[in-house]
Length: 334
Length: 234
Ligand SMILES: Nc1ncnc2c1ncn2[C@@H]1O[C@H](COP(=O)(O)OP(=O)(O)OP(=O)(O)O)[C@@H](O)[C@H]1O
Ligand SMILES: [Mg+2]
Image 1 (cartoon, chains in turn brown, orange):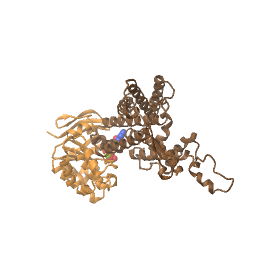
Image 2: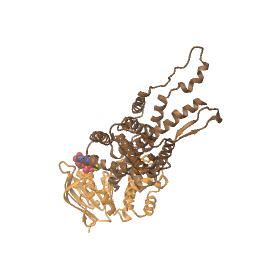
Image 3: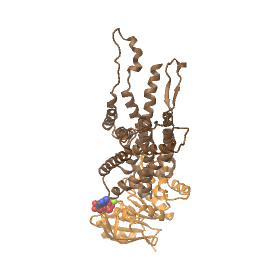
Image 4: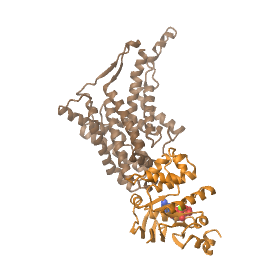
Protein backbone atom coordinates (compact mmCIF):
# COMPACT_ATOMS: atom_id res chain seq x y z
CA UNK A 1 0.00 0.00 0.00
CA UNK A 2 2.74 2.45 0.93
CA UNK A 3 4.33 1.82 -2.43
CA UNK A 4 1.12 2.80 -4.19
CA UNK A 5 0.84 5.94 -2.09
CA UNK A 6 4.43 6.80 -2.89
CA UNK A 7 3.64 6.30 -6.57
CA UNK A 8 0.58 8.54 -6.35
CA UNK A 9 2.53 11.26 -4.58
CA UNK A 10 5.57 11.16 -6.80
CA UNK A 11 4.13 10.33 -10.20
CA UNK A 12 0.42 11.00 -10.39
CA UNK A 13 0.39 14.33 -8.59
CA UNK A 14 3.73 15.65 -9.92
CA UNK A 15 2.90 14.46 -13.41
CA UNK A 16 -0.46 16.16 -13.39
CA UNK A 17 1.06 19.42 -12.15
CA UNK A 18 3.76 19.31 -14.81
CA UNK A 19 1.22 18.26 -17.44
CA UNK A 20 -0.98 21.24 -16.62
CA UNK A 21 1.97 23.59 -17.04
CA UNK A 22 3.08 22.01 -20.32
CA UNK A 23 -0.47 21.90 -21.66
CA UNK A 24 -1.18 25.58 -20.96
CA UNK A 25 2.13 26.58 -22.51
CA UNK A 26 1.71 24.30 -25.52
CA UNK A 27 -1.80 25.61 -26.26
CA UNK A 28 -0.29 29.06 -26.83
CA UNK A 29 2.51 27.72 -29.03
CA UNK A 30 0.08 25.68 -31.10
CA UNK A 31 -2.46 28.51 -31.52
CA UNK A 32 0.24 30.98 -32.56
CA UNK A 33 1.57 28.45 -35.03
CA UNK A 34 -1.90 27.79 -36.40
CA UNK A 35 -2.74 31.45 -36.94
CA UNK A 36 0.63 33.07 -37.66
CA UNK A 37 2.57 30.07 -38.97
CA UNK A 38 5.74 30.47 -36.98
CA UNK A 39 7.35 28.80 -33.98
CA UNK A 40 7.10 31.29 -31.14
CA UNK A 41 10.36 30.61 -29.39
CA UNK A 42 9.82 33.37 -26.81
CA UNK A 43 6.80 31.58 -25.39
CA UNK A 44 8.72 30.22 -22.41
CA UNK A 45 9.78 33.71 -21.52
CA UNK A 46 6.24 34.98 -21.80
CA UNK A 47 5.56 32.42 -19.08
CA UNK A 48 8.41 33.75 -16.94
CA UNK A 49 7.18 37.27 -17.54
CA UNK A 50 3.70 36.29 -16.39
CA UNK A 51 5.12 34.71 -13.26
CA UNK A 52 7.05 37.88 -12.37
CA UNK A 53 3.95 40.01 -12.97
CA UNK A 54 2.05 37.80 -10.52
CA UNK A 55 4.98 37.95 -8.11
CA UNK A 56 4.97 41.75 -8.14
CA UNK A 57 1.21 41.82 -7.65
CA UNK A 58 1.45 39.33 -4.79
CA UNK A 59 4.15 41.51 -3.23
CA UNK A 60 1.87 44.52 -3.59
CA UNK A 61 -0.92 42.65 -1.82
CA UNK A 62 1.41 41.71 0.99
CA UNK A 63 2.69 45.28 1.30
CA UNK A 64 -0.86 46.58 1.49
CA UNK A 65 -1.57 44.05 4.19
CA UNK A 66 -4.24 42.29 2.19
CA UNK A 67 -4.79 38.83 3.57
CA UNK A 68 -6.37 36.35 1.20
CA UNK A 69 -7.94 33.03 2.02
CA UNK A 70 -6.24 31.39 -0.96
CA UNK A 71 -2.54 31.59 -1.84
CA UNK A 72 -1.88 35.12 -3.10
CA UNK A 73 -0.34 33.81 -6.32
CA UNK A 74 -3.78 32.51 -7.34
CA UNK A 75 -5.76 35.49 -6.10
CA UNK A 76 -3.77 37.91 -8.27
CA UNK A 77 -3.84 35.52 -11.24
CA UNK A 78 -6.76 37.13 -13.13
CA UNK A 79 -5.12 40.56 -12.96
CA UNK A 80 -1.76 39.12 -13.96
CA UNK A 81 -3.41 37.39 -16.93
CA UNK A 82 -4.90 40.65 -18.15
CA UNK A 83 -1.55 42.45 -17.88
CA UNK A 84 0.23 39.55 -19.61
CA UNK A 85 -2.34 39.61 -22.42
CA UNK A 86 -1.69 43.32 -23.00
CA UNK A 87 2.07 42.74 -22.96
CA UNK A 88 1.67 39.93 -25.51
CA UNK A 89 -0.35 42.29 -27.73
CA UNK A 90 2.37 44.92 -27.31
CA UNK A 91 5.13 42.49 -28.21
CA UNK A 92 3.23 41.46 -31.33
CA UNK A 93 2.59 45.05 -32.35
CA UNK A 94 6.18 46.10 -31.68
CA UNK A 95 8.10 43.17 -33.12
CA UNK A 96 6.10 40.60 -35.07
CA UNK A 97 3.41 42.69 -36.79
CA UNK A 98 5.89 44.93 -38.67
CA UNK A 99 7.69 41.83 -39.97
CA UNK A 100 4.40 40.19 -40.97
CA UNK A 101 3.44 43.29 -42.90
CA UNK A 102 6.60 42.93 -44.97
CA UNK A 103 5.80 39.29 -45.64
CA UNK A 104 8.64 37.93 -43.49
CA UNK A 105 9.30 34.19 -43.78
CA UNK A 106 8.63 31.88 -40.81
CA UNK A 107 12.38 31.55 -40.23
CA UNK A 108 12.70 35.31 -39.91
CA UNK A 109 9.83 35.32 -37.43
CA UNK A 110 11.45 32.52 -35.43
CA UNK A 111 14.70 34.44 -35.20
CA UNK A 112 12.83 37.58 -34.21
CA UNK A 113 11.20 35.61 -31.40
CA UNK A 114 14.63 34.44 -30.22
CA UNK A 115 15.47 38.13 -30.02
CA UNK A 116 12.35 38.70 -27.94
CA UNK A 117 13.45 35.85 -25.66
CA UNK A 118 16.79 37.50 -24.98
CA UNK A 119 15.12 40.84 -24.46
CA UNK A 120 12.56 39.58 -21.95
CA UNK A 121 15.21 37.67 -20.02
CA UNK A 122 17.49 40.69 -20.02
CA UNK A 123 14.74 42.99 -18.80
CA UNK A 124 13.77 40.60 -16.01
CA UNK A 125 17.38 40.31 -14.84
CA UNK A 126 17.71 44.06 -15.01
CA UNK A 127 14.66 44.63 -12.84
CA UNK A 128 14.69 41.65 -10.51
CA UNK A 129 18.30 40.48 -10.58
CA UNK A 130 19.27 36.94 -11.43
CA UNK A 131 18.53 35.37 -8.06
CA UNK A 132 15.88 32.82 -7.23
CA UNK A 133 12.72 33.86 -5.44
CA UNK A 134 9.78 32.04 -3.99
CA UNK A 135 6.10 32.78 -3.68
CA UNK A 136 6.21 31.15 -0.26
CA UNK A 137 8.53 33.59 1.47
CA UNK A 138 5.61 35.20 3.19
CA UNK A 139 3.05 32.45 3.29
CA UNK A 140 3.68 28.79 3.91
CA UNK A 141 1.76 26.37 1.73
CA UNK A 142 -1.00 24.31 3.22
CA UNK A 143 -0.58 20.63 2.72
CA UNK A 144 -3.59 18.34 2.64
CA UNK A 145 -2.83 14.89 3.93
CA UNK A 146 -5.32 12.23 3.00
CA UNK A 147 -5.06 9.56 5.64
CA UNK A 148 -4.72 6.11 4.09
CA UNK A 149 -4.53 4.04 7.26
CA UNK A 150 -7.97 2.67 6.52
CA UNK A 151 -6.43 1.01 3.48
CA UNK A 152 -3.41 -0.24 5.37
CA UNK A 153 -1.11 2.61 4.44
CA UNK A 154 1.22 4.12 7.01
CA UNK A 155 1.83 7.31 5.05
CA UNK A 156 -0.76 9.75 3.76
CA UNK A 157 -1.34 10.93 0.22
CA UNK A 158 -0.11 14.48 0.42
CA UNK A 159 -1.07 17.23 -1.91
CA UNK A 160 -0.48 20.94 -1.42
CA UNK A 161 -3.15 23.59 -1.68
CA UNK A 162 -1.45 25.24 -4.68
CA UNK A 163 -1.44 21.87 -6.45
CA UNK A 164 -5.16 21.41 -5.92
CA UNK A 165 -5.76 24.92 -7.19
CA UNK A 166 -3.58 24.25 -10.24
CA UNK A 167 -5.76 21.30 -11.24
CA UNK A 168 -8.92 23.33 -10.77
CA UNK A 169 -7.61 26.35 -12.67
CA UNK A 170 -6.28 24.23 -15.54
CA UNK A 171 -9.54 22.33 -15.84
CA UNK A 172 -11.57 25.56 -15.85
CA UNK A 173 -9.32 27.18 -18.47
CA UNK A 174 -9.41 24.14 -20.74
CA UNK A 175 -13.22 24.00 -20.55
CA UNK A 176 -13.44 27.74 -21.22
CA UNK A 177 -11.12 27.40 -24.21
CA UNK A 178 -13.13 24.48 -25.55
CA UNK A 179 -16.39 26.43 -25.29
CA UNK A 180 -14.77 29.46 -26.90
CA UNK A 181 -13.41 27.49 -29.86
CA UNK A 182 -16.58 25.50 -30.53
CA UNK A 183 -19.38 27.89 -29.59
CA UNK A 184 -18.34 31.49 -30.14
CA UNK A 185 -18.23 33.31 -33.45
CA UNK A 186 -14.65 34.48 -32.88
CA UNK A 187 -13.49 31.07 -31.68
CA UNK A 188 -14.83 29.44 -34.83
CA UNK A 189 -13.20 32.17 -36.90
CA UNK A 190 -9.95 31.32 -35.16
CA UNK A 191 -10.26 27.66 -36.15
CA UNK A 192 -11.22 28.75 -39.66
CA UNK A 193 -8.14 30.92 -39.97
CA UNK A 194 -5.87 28.16 -38.66
CA UNK A 195 -7.45 25.84 -41.22
CA UNK A 196 -7.20 28.17 -44.24
CA UNK A 197 -6.07 31.76 -43.76
CA UNK A 198 -6.69 32.83 -47.36
CA UNK A 199 -10.27 31.57 -47.31
CA UNK A 200 -10.82 33.23 -43.93
CA UNK A 201 -9.81 36.53 -45.50
CA UNK A 202 -12.02 35.89 -48.53
CA UNK A 203 -14.96 35.18 -46.20
CA UNK A 204 -14.59 38.66 -44.77
CA UNK A 205 -13.28 37.44 -41.41
CA UNK A 206 -11.47 40.21 -39.59
CA UNK A 207 -8.12 38.43 -39.53
CA UNK A 208 -6.36 41.20 -37.60
CA UNK A 209 -8.90 40.75 -34.81
CA UNK A 210 -8.34 36.98 -34.81
CA UNK A 211 -4.59 37.58 -34.49
CA UNK A 212 -5.19 39.84 -31.48
CA UNK A 213 -7.46 37.27 -29.83
CA UNK A 214 -4.77 34.64 -30.38
CA UNK A 215 -2.20 36.74 -28.53
CA UNK A 216 -4.61 37.45 -25.72
CA UNK A 217 -5.28 33.72 -25.21
CA UNK A 218 -1.66 32.66 -25.68
CA UNK A 219 -0.34 35.44 -23.45
CA UNK A 220 -2.77 34.91 -20.60
CA UNK A 221 -2.42 31.11 -20.61
CA UNK A 222 1.37 31.50 -20.66
CA UNK A 223 1.00 33.70 -17.60
CA UNK A 224 -0.96 30.98 -15.77
CA UNK A 225 1.56 28.32 -16.78
CA UNK A 226 4.42 30.54 -15.61
CA UNK A 227 2.81 31.21 -12.25
CA UNK A 228 2.20 27.48 -11.76
CA UNK A 229 5.77 26.69 -12.64
CA UNK A 230 6.99 29.34 -10.20
CA UNK A 231 4.73 27.93 -7.49
CA UNK A 232 5.85 24.40 -8.24
CA UNK A 233 9.58 25.09 -8.51
CA UNK A 234 10.79 28.62 -7.85
CA UNK A 235 10.88 31.98 -9.57
CA UNK A 236 13.97 32.80 -11.61
CA UNK A 237 14.70 34.70 -14.83
CA UNK A 238 15.47 31.58 -16.84
CA UNK A 239 12.59 29.65 -15.31
CA UNK A 240 10.63 28.84 -18.43
CA UNK A 241 13.54 28.92 -20.82
CA UNK A 242 14.30 25.37 -19.68
CA UNK A 243 10.88 24.06 -20.54
CA UNK A 244 10.66 25.51 -24.03
CA UNK A 245 11.73 22.14 -25.44
CA UNK A 246 9.07 20.03 -23.67
CA UNK A 247 6.44 22.63 -24.57
CA UNK A 248 7.32 22.59 -28.24
CA UNK A 249 7.53 18.82 -28.09
CA UNK A 250 4.02 18.75 -26.58
CA UNK A 251 2.67 21.03 -29.32
CA UNK A 252 4.29 19.01 -32.10
CA UNK A 253 3.40 15.60 -30.64
CA UNK A 254 -0.20 16.78 -30.33
CA UNK A 255 -0.25 18.07 -33.89
CA UNK A 256 0.71 21.73 -34.51
CA UNK A 257 -2.27 24.06 -34.70
CA UNK A 258 -4.43 21.63 -32.76
CA UNK A 259 -5.41 22.98 -29.32
CA UNK A 260 -6.66 19.65 -27.93
CA UNK A 261 -3.58 17.95 -29.27
CA UNK A 262 -1.44 20.38 -27.28
CA UNK A 263 -3.27 19.42 -24.10
CA UNK A 264 -2.86 15.69 -24.72
CA UNK A 265 0.75 16.25 -25.77
CA UNK A 266 1.45 18.27 -22.64
CA UNK A 267 0.25 15.54 -20.30
CA UNK A 268 1.91 12.83 -22.36
CA UNK A 269 5.32 14.48 -22.20
CA UNK A 270 4.89 15.35 -18.53
CA UNK A 271 4.03 11.77 -17.51
CA UNK A 272 6.74 10.34 -19.71
CA UNK A 273 9.28 12.59 -17.98
CA UNK A 274 7.95 11.87 -14.52
CA UNK A 275 7.87 8.12 -15.06
CA UNK A 276 11.32 8.15 -16.61
CA UNK A 277 12.99 9.79 -13.63
CA UNK A 278 10.88 7.92 -11.07
CA UNK A 279 12.85 5.61 -8.83
CA UNK A 280 11.13 2.27 -9.38
CA UNK A 281 12.95 0.65 -6.48
CA UNK A 282 10.57 2.43 -4.15
CA UNK A 283 7.60 0.55 -5.58
CA UNK A 284 9.30 -2.72 -6.31
CA UNK A 285 10.87 -3.07 -2.88
CA UNK A 286 8.46 -5.82 -1.78
CA UNK A 287 9.93 -7.99 -4.54
CA UNK A 288 13.20 -8.06 -2.61
CA UNK A 289 11.66 -10.84 -0.50
CA UNK A 290 11.27 -13.00 -3.59
CA UNK A 291 14.84 -12.55 -4.70
CA UNK A 292 17.44 -15.16 -3.70
CA UNK A 293 19.55 -14.53 -0.63
CA UNK A 294 22.20 -11.89 -1.05
CA UNK A 295 20.51 -10.24 -4.02
CA UNK A 296 18.58 -7.00 -3.78
CA UNK A 297 17.21 -4.40 -6.11
CA UNK A 298 19.64 -1.54 -6.71
CA UNK A 299 18.99 1.56 -4.64
CA UNK A 300 18.12 3.61 -7.70
CA UNK A 301 16.12 2.10 -10.50
CA UNK A 302 15.19 5.18 -12.52
CA UNK A 303 15.14 4.83 -16.30
CA UNK A 304 16.79 8.21 -16.76
CA UNK A 305 18.82 10.21 -14.22
CA UNK A 306 16.98 13.36 -13.16
CA UNK A 307 19.52 15.67 -14.74
CA UNK A 308 18.77 14.12 -18.13
CA UNK A 309 15.02 14.63 -17.84
CA UNK A 310 15.04 16.98 -20.82
CA UNK A 311 16.17 14.18 -23.13
CA UNK A 312 12.83 12.42 -22.59
CA UNK A 313 10.91 15.19 -24.37
CA UNK A 314 13.57 15.26 -27.03
CA UNK A 315 13.36 11.52 -27.69
CA UNK A 316 9.55 11.62 -27.87
CA UNK A 317 9.78 14.56 -30.24
CA UNK A 318 12.21 12.81 -32.56
CA UNK A 319 10.21 9.58 -32.54
CA UNK A 320 7.02 11.49 -33.32
CA UNK A 321 8.65 13.33 -36.20
CA UNK A 322 9.91 10.03 -37.61
CA UNK A 323 6.79 7.95 -37.13
CA UNK A 324 3.94 10.41 -37.37
CA UNK A 325 5.15 13.87 -38.39
CA UNK A 326 1.66 15.34 -38.25
CA UNK A 327 1.29 14.53 -34.56
CA UNK A 328 -1.32 12.48 -32.72
CA UNK A 329 -4.11 14.64 -34.04
CA UNK A 330 -3.48 15.59 -37.62
CA UNK A 331 -2.00 19.05 -37.32
CA UNK A 332 -1.88 21.73 -39.98
CA UNK A 333 0.89 21.10 -42.49
CA UNK A 334 3.61 23.54 -43.60
CA UNK B 1 -26.58 51.32 -64.22
CA UNK B 2 -24.49 48.18 -64.10
CA UNK B 3 -24.05 46.31 -60.82
CA UNK B 4 -20.32 46.07 -61.40
CA UNK B 5 -18.26 47.80 -64.05
CA UNK B 6 -14.55 47.39 -64.72
CA UNK B 7 -12.93 50.11 -66.85
CA UNK B 8 -9.42 49.63 -68.19
CA UNK B 9 -8.32 47.71 -65.12
CA UNK B 10 -4.56 47.25 -64.87
CA UNK B 11 -2.99 45.18 -62.12
CA UNK B 12 -0.69 42.34 -61.13
CA UNK B 13 1.22 40.63 -58.38
CA UNK B 14 3.96 43.22 -57.97
CA UNK B 15 5.96 42.48 -61.13
CA UNK B 16 4.85 43.28 -64.64
CA UNK B 17 1.08 43.83 -64.83
CA UNK B 18 -0.97 40.73 -65.64
CA UNK B 19 -4.13 42.68 -66.48
CA UNK B 20 -3.62 45.25 -69.22
CA UNK B 21 -6.96 46.99 -69.46
CA UNK B 22 -9.89 44.73 -68.65
CA UNK B 23 -13.38 46.04 -69.36
CA UNK B 24 -16.52 44.34 -68.09
CA UNK B 25 -20.03 45.21 -67.02
CA UNK B 26 -22.58 42.99 -65.30
CA UNK B 27 -26.18 43.62 -64.25
CA UNK B 28 -27.66 41.97 -61.21
CA UNK B 29 -29.82 39.85 -63.49
CA UNK B 30 -26.79 38.66 -65.49
CA UNK B 31 -24.75 35.53 -65.55
CA UNK B 32 -21.36 36.64 -66.79
CA UNK B 33 -18.86 34.04 -67.93
CA UNK B 34 -15.16 34.68 -68.49
CA UNK B 35 -13.36 32.25 -70.78
CA UNK B 36 -9.90 32.21 -72.28
CA UNK B 37 -6.66 30.25 -72.48
CA UNK B 38 -4.61 29.22 -69.44
CA UNK B 39 -2.70 32.12 -67.95
CA UNK B 40 -4.91 34.71 -69.67
CA UNK B 41 -5.62 36.44 -66.37
CA UNK B 42 -9.14 35.12 -65.68
CA UNK B 43 -8.51 34.25 -62.04
CA UNK B 44 -6.45 37.39 -61.70
CA UNK B 45 -9.44 39.47 -62.83
CA UNK B 46 -11.65 38.03 -60.07
CA UNK B 47 -8.91 38.49 -57.48
CA UNK B 48 -8.41 42.09 -58.59
CA UNK B 49 -12.10 42.82 -58.07
CA UNK B 50 -11.95 41.22 -54.63
CA UNK B 51 -8.93 43.23 -53.48
CA UNK B 52 -6.56 40.25 -53.37
CA UNK B 53 -3.96 41.94 -55.53
CA UNK B 54 -3.03 45.52 -56.39
CA UNK B 55 -5.00 47.39 -59.02
CA UNK B 56 -2.69 50.05 -60.43
CA UNK B 57 -4.92 51.53 -63.10
CA UNK B 58 -8.54 51.91 -64.15
CA UNK B 59 -11.64 51.77 -61.99
CA UNK B 60 -13.87 49.08 -60.54
CA UNK B 61 -17.32 50.39 -59.74
CA UNK B 62 -19.67 48.32 -57.65
CA UNK B 63 -23.11 49.71 -56.87
CA UNK B 64 -21.90 53.13 -58.02
CA UNK B 65 -18.72 53.41 -55.96
CA UNK B 66 -15.10 52.72 -56.79
CA UNK B 67 -14.02 49.64 -54.89
CA UNK B 68 -10.58 49.17 -56.47
CA UNK B 69 -8.14 47.97 -53.81
CA UNK B 70 -10.82 47.59 -51.13
CA UNK B 71 -10.24 44.53 -48.95
CA UNK B 72 -12.62 41.56 -48.62
CA UNK B 73 -13.79 42.46 -45.11
CA UNK B 74 -15.07 45.73 -46.60
CA UNK B 75 -16.46 44.14 -49.78
CA UNK B 76 -18.38 41.23 -48.26
CA UNK B 77 -20.67 43.50 -46.21
CA UNK B 78 -21.61 45.56 -49.30
CA UNK B 79 -22.69 42.49 -51.27
CA UNK B 80 -19.70 40.91 -52.97
CA UNK B 81 -18.77 37.24 -52.51
CA UNK B 82 -16.02 35.09 -53.97
CA UNK B 83 -15.53 31.35 -54.28
CA UNK B 84 -11.87 30.65 -55.09
CA UNK B 85 -11.03 27.76 -57.38
CA UNK B 86 -9.04 25.69 -54.92
CA UNK B 87 -9.03 25.17 -51.18
CA UNK B 88 -12.42 26.83 -50.98
CA UNK B 89 -13.79 25.09 -47.88
CA UNK B 90 -12.57 24.95 -44.28
CA UNK B 91 -11.85 21.21 -44.23
CA UNK B 92 -11.65 20.83 -40.44
CA UNK B 93 -14.83 22.80 -39.77
CA UNK B 94 -18.25 21.23 -40.02
CA UNK B 95 -20.48 22.08 -42.95
CA UNK B 96 -22.59 24.30 -40.73
CA UNK B 97 -19.54 26.10 -39.33
CA UNK B 98 -18.38 26.72 -42.90
CA UNK B 99 -21.68 28.43 -43.58
CA UNK B 100 -21.42 30.44 -40.36
CA UNK B 101 -18.03 31.72 -41.46
CA UNK B 102 -19.65 33.03 -44.64
CA UNK B 103 -21.92 35.08 -42.39
CA UNK B 104 -19.05 36.36 -40.23
CA UNK B 105 -19.55 39.98 -41.31
CA UNK B 106 -23.28 39.85 -40.51
CA UNK B 107 -24.39 40.87 -37.06
CA UNK B 108 -28.08 40.14 -37.68
CA UNK B 109 -29.84 36.79 -37.41
CA UNK B 110 -28.80 34.70 -40.41
CA UNK B 111 -30.95 31.65 -39.72
CA UNK B 112 -33.22 32.39 -42.71
CA UNK B 113 -30.25 32.57 -45.04
CA UNK B 114 -28.96 29.28 -43.72
CA UNK B 115 -32.34 27.65 -44.30
CA UNK B 116 -32.31 29.11 -47.82
CA UNK B 117 -28.87 27.58 -48.47
CA UNK B 118 -29.95 24.21 -47.08
CA UNK B 119 -33.03 24.37 -49.29
CA UNK B 120 -30.79 24.97 -52.28
CA UNK B 121 -28.41 22.16 -51.28
CA UNK B 122 -30.42 19.56 -49.37
CA UNK B 123 -27.39 17.23 -49.11
CA UNK B 124 -25.66 19.80 -46.97
CA UNK B 125 -28.49 19.81 -44.46
CA UNK B 126 -27.96 16.07 -44.00
CA UNK B 127 -24.22 16.53 -43.50
CA UNK B 128 -24.33 19.72 -41.46
CA UNK B 129 -22.33 18.21 -38.56
CA UNK B 130 -19.73 16.52 -40.74
CA UNK B 131 -16.30 18.08 -41.37
CA UNK B 132 -16.31 19.61 -44.86
CA UNK B 133 -13.05 17.78 -45.62
CA UNK B 134 -14.94 14.49 -45.58
CA UNK B 135 -17.31 15.45 -48.40
CA UNK B 136 -17.01 14.59 -52.09
CA UNK B 137 -15.67 17.14 -54.57
CA UNK B 138 -19.15 18.10 -55.75
CA UNK B 139 -20.48 18.45 -52.23
CA UNK B 140 -17.49 20.59 -51.27
CA UNK B 141 -18.26 22.88 -54.17
CA UNK B 142 -21.77 23.23 -52.73
CA UNK B 143 -20.33 24.07 -49.30
CA UNK B 144 -18.10 26.66 -50.93
CA UNK B 145 -21.04 28.23 -52.76
CA UNK B 146 -23.21 28.03 -49.67
CA UNK B 147 -20.55 29.77 -47.62
CA UNK B 148 -20.33 32.56 -50.17
CA UNK B 149 -24.13 32.96 -50.25
CA UNK B 150 -24.41 33.34 -46.47
CA UNK B 151 -23.50 37.03 -46.68
CA UNK B 152 -26.50 37.58 -49.00
CA UNK B 153 -24.40 38.91 -51.87
CA UNK B 154 -25.73 40.80 -54.88
CA UNK B 155 -22.75 39.61 -56.91
CA UNK B 156 -21.33 36.12 -56.58
CA UNK B 157 -17.98 35.47 -58.21
CA UNK B 158 -16.93 31.88 -58.89
CA UNK B 159 -13.57 30.66 -60.16
CA UNK B 160 -14.05 27.49 -62.22
CA UNK B 161 -16.88 26.02 -60.14
CA UNK B 162 -16.99 22.91 -62.32
CA UNK B 163 -13.26 22.14 -62.18
CA UNK B 164 -12.58 18.50 -61.41
CA UNK B 165 -16.23 17.47 -61.31
CA UNK B 166 -17.74 14.57 -63.22
CA UNK B 167 -20.03 15.56 -66.13
CA UNK B 168 -23.14 14.79 -64.07
CA UNK B 169 -22.01 17.14 -61.29
CA UNK B 170 -21.01 19.83 -63.82
CA UNK B 171 -24.58 20.00 -65.04
CA UNK B 172 -25.87 20.01 -61.49
CA UNK B 173 -23.60 22.87 -60.40
CA UNK B 174 -24.48 24.91 -63.50
CA UNK B 175 -28.18 24.41 -62.79
CA UNK B 176 -27.65 25.57 -59.22
CA UNK B 177 -25.85 28.68 -60.44
CA UNK B 178 -28.79 29.49 -62.70
CA UNK B 179 -31.19 28.99 -59.80
CA UNK B 180 -29.14 31.28 -57.55
CA UNK B 181 -29.18 33.87 -60.31
CA UNK B 182 -32.97 33.62 -60.60
CA UNK B 183 -33.18 34.44 -56.90
CA UNK B 184 -31.60 37.82 -57.63
CA UNK B 185 -27.88 37.21 -57.32
CA UNK B 186 -25.67 38.49 -60.14
CA UNK B 187 -23.04 35.95 -61.25
CA UNK B 188 -19.55 36.47 -62.60
CA UNK B 189 -17.69 33.24 -63.19
CA UNK B 190 -14.61 31.84 -64.86
CA UNK B 191 -15.08 28.56 -66.72
CA UNK B 192 -12.97 26.04 -68.58
CA UNK B 193 -16.06 24.22 -69.83
CA UNK B 194 -16.37 27.28 -72.06
CA UNK B 195 -18.96 26.17 -74.59
CA UNK B 196 -21.23 24.66 -71.96
CA UNK B 197 -21.05 27.75 -69.73
CA UNK B 198 -21.45 30.31 -72.49
CA UNK B 199 -24.63 28.52 -73.52
CA UNK B 200 -26.43 29.93 -70.48
CA UNK B 201 -24.40 33.13 -70.05
CA UNK B 202 -26.15 36.44 -70.63
CA UNK B 203 -22.72 38.10 -70.80
CA UNK B 204 -19.58 36.45 -72.14
CA UNK B 205 -16.00 37.72 -72.09
CA UNK B 206 -13.07 36.18 -73.90
CA UNK B 207 -9.87 37.13 -72.14
CA UNK B 208 -6.37 36.75 -73.60
CA UNK B 209 -3.11 38.28 -72.40
CA UNK B 210 -4.89 40.27 -69.74
CA UNK B 211 -7.30 41.97 -72.11
CA UNK B 212 -10.82 41.38 -73.41
CA UNK B 213 -10.65 40.09 -76.94
CA UNK B 214 -14.37 39.52 -77.42
CA UNK B 215 -17.43 40.59 -75.50
CA UNK B 216 -21.07 39.73 -76.15
CA UNK B 217 -23.91 37.52 -75.04
CA UNK B 218 -22.96 33.88 -74.58
CA UNK B 219 -24.86 32.90 -77.69
CA UNK B 220 -23.13 35.59 -79.77
CA UNK B 221 -19.69 34.39 -78.71
CA UNK B 222 -20.51 30.77 -79.49
CA UNK B 223 -21.81 31.83 -82.90
CA UNK B 224 -18.75 33.97 -83.69
CA UNK B 225 -16.54 31.84 -85.98
CA UNK B 226 -13.35 33.56 -84.81
CA UNK B 227 -14.07 32.92 -81.12
CA UNK B 228 -15.08 29.37 -81.88
CA UNK B 229 -11.89 28.76 -83.87
CA UNK B 230 -9.37 30.35 -81.49
CA UNK B 231 -10.88 29.84 -78.07
CA UNK B 232 -13.55 27.16 -78.12
CA UNK B 233 -11.60 24.51 -79.93
CA UNK B 234 -13.34 24.80 -83.33
N1 LIG C 1 0.17 34.70 -56.99
C1 LIG C 1 0.76 35.01 -58.15
N2 LIG C 1 1.94 35.66 -58.16
C2 LIG C 1 2.54 35.98 -59.32
N3 LIG C 1 2.05 35.70 -60.53
C3 LIG C 1 0.87 35.05 -60.59
C4 LIG C 1 0.17 34.67 -59.41
N4 LIG C 1 -0.96 34.04 -59.78
C5 LIG C 1 -0.96 34.04 -61.12
N5 LIG C 1 0.13 34.64 -61.63
C6 LIG C 1 0.44 34.84 -63.06
O1 LIG C 1 -0.58 35.59 -63.63
C7 LIG C 1 -0.90 35.13 -64.95
C8 LIG C 1 -2.38 34.92 -65.08
O2 LIG C 1 -2.78 33.91 -64.14
P1 LIG C 1 -4.28 33.54 -63.85
O3 LIG C 1 -4.28 32.64 -62.70
O4 LIG C 1 -5.08 34.78 -63.78
O5 LIG C 1 -4.64 32.74 -65.18
P2 LIG C 1 -6.01 32.08 -65.56
O6 LIG C 1 -6.52 32.80 -66.75
O7 LIG C 1 -6.91 31.97 -64.40
O8 LIG C 1 -5.49 30.65 -66.02
P3 LIG C 1 -6.04 29.18 -65.70
O9 LIG C 1 -7.01 28.89 -66.79
O10 LIG C 1 -4.83 28.34 -65.82
O11 LIG C 1 -6.64 29.20 -64.36
C9 LIG C 1 -0.07 33.88 -65.17
O12 LIG C 1 1.00 34.21 -66.01
C10 LIG C 1 0.44 33.51 -63.80
O13 LIG C 1 1.74 33.00 -63.89
MG1 LIG D 1 -7.49 30.40 -63.02
